[in-house]
Length: 273
Image 1: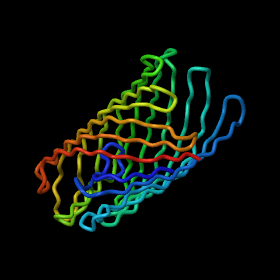
Image 2: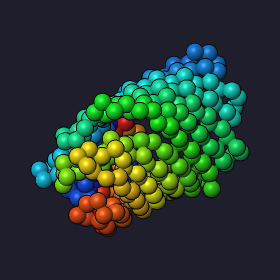
Image 3: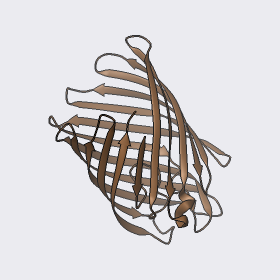
Image 4: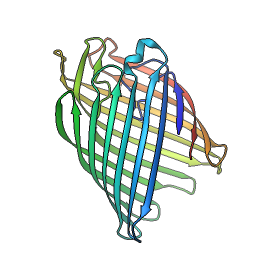
């Protein structure tokens, strides 16, 4: 269970970025259950419920919740390689704009390249159902990780999917049924002590909006974020964090706010059961 309150939505996690301002309360509740079938095969079931609520009524049209559940089957080929097959259903309910349902089916591989390097790759399909428009899209997620020193690790990733973020325009009262988004980023973390750790990261989002209703024309959107933060472990179950995030957004000429800069300091608590 995690809960955070920020003076802006978090562009880096993909939950909400339809507005560029407005105090936002974000929560996440998730649970997973795993069982071994034999020494090589295992399966995992997971469910999660998360979303955001704006405290300012002017922006509550972006209030939304996500409910998802999934099942995966994993095969450990050897000490270095694991294969996986996953299926997940995700339902998104929005205060305004079209709700959507997505069914993901992915094949994955996780491989240890060396004692300090590893990679994971997931490819598959996303069946997206929104306002009677049903279409199949590809999905991709690739991550490379490296343990630099005993306490320092870094990773880089690239991901593609068809999201439902910023697809409602409150100015034109229109919706975009398709939002093809590429995410590219790098993250680093440094464990100073068992209780104190630091993190930093940067990400780029390239979004293409299409299939607009009420005559809304297609447009592209680019968002860049950079962040630094610290995490402190209070107990085995409870931890706290404080982060600074800089966001630059380029929305083309589709909205009254074409470009913007945001500086956000946020704090949160995470409790793990």
